[in-house]
Image (cartoon, rainbow, N blue to C red):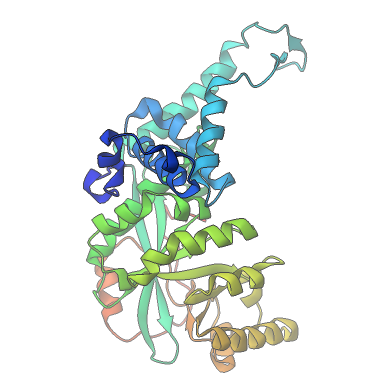
Length: 373
């Protein structure tokens, strides 16, 4: 990931060489927190490949202690210096164990090395690209936004889920997610200028201190950027996200909550975060034209979204009857294969500058389609 040092807070460079703080400041929690943030910014902005595992470990600590960088930094430093415990027997392929200190068979080591090598090749070769799927405003009958999806250009599996899982195993998950974000932001420059761009992000990436600088580098107007949360949140993460995203939202960046209704406490998290957009999961939309329970739930969600002042978008529309049902209930937006599949072709994106018209049926999938999340 390319990081422009000028996009980082001034404290990341100037405070590193500043005179020591007065004794009275050294025990001030706010000063300690600010100093910890400075150190974390410096580490995360170092692009050296050999430090990738250190950056991933530090991001994991930040995700475990949202809003408390000083605690995350302390735990990170101790994890680098403190043994994790006594050596454990190494299991063999036959299920037995080798004595402590004995090397595992070469095949196991090669498997991990090969995984890391594959991910490094993807990162170094930037072997991914972005597809967009249009988001339709049902009241206007036109395309008003586009959601970004990641596709991989490799000789192996083209399944995006596979590559992100492999990256996580190799402790390069953050690097790959940021590269996918960079690709989406660059490709978004070729979309019709009136469309907003929905960027699927994990909570950990939304809390990453490098995110604001990357969004600023993109030159995409803040009011065209929608950060779409893709995972379940803990109460601590929700509070930390409110604090971390407040400056971005103050400049016009919007927040979308994905998979609404797909897990138990999703409505509680929506009330805490107050997103501008709520996206209904495909599991709630499938067969809504004949399922009375789904019909009743979505009807209630329409009222819930109105109370919050949020737009409600139905994901995964696959039939004409599903589209008609959500429209009749007052759902404000829709996307799905019935309307259009994700596409990497800029000439397809240009068509979204005109009023949208539902097609007679779902399109044939592209031969190498693979969708992130």
